[in-house]
Image (cartoon, rainbow, N blue to C red; front, side):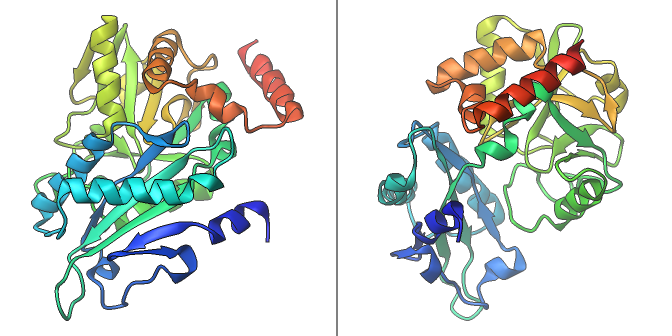
Length: 319
């Protein structure tokens, strides 16, 4: 058993009123979560103990519950206290520069009695997995799968039954294992990645898809607020791949890494120097908002030799 597996074996989860070791965290095979009849949220710790914008995340999962007609059987204040208690019970597993994902999930419950199931999970953030992208930029690819239209399912609900997204991920990762899947809608508009919101910077303006077509991410909202504060023009509007190919920068936003530059789209190396100037300003402002250097926290998990090699690779690409 490696160190990561050993730590995971000690995690404490919350399942339906009980704080239990991960190995004992179980639900019935009859639970509606097995049918995707459930909503969830993802949040992260900052400096090990603080959860960034926890109230925004709590509001989002309860909004998803209301839209999905799922009674969580808990108040927002009760769920918040459960989440904070899960952090308290696991914080000793976090190293000096570690942080964690916190994932609450609520289903409509057993097919037999209909009582809701409430679960909260705790998982270390995979810093090493994403570290190199802060220097080299992430890669994204458009799959053949299209985003579900909002008149079929409201994209603002963070729900589990997202088979179309998993198919999209598998399609692009057969080509490039660490590539993100960038979904278009049925009209050819860019929407979102399967696990993140997507932004471009074109002619000095920050552009992202409207919430009609995407999940209203908390990190997405922070970026829009930072744009307003910094005087950077920002717009929520439809745009197409043509706009992406002609953009000066692109980045993704998500709970774990908050902001990450993108360098390649559909195998095209569009931006060799990342992050670009606007992305850099926003990343610096976001780091101040969090109270930690976002990129450096990820890079600090690499060895000195790995960092040196990454710097050499970055210099070679930028030359």
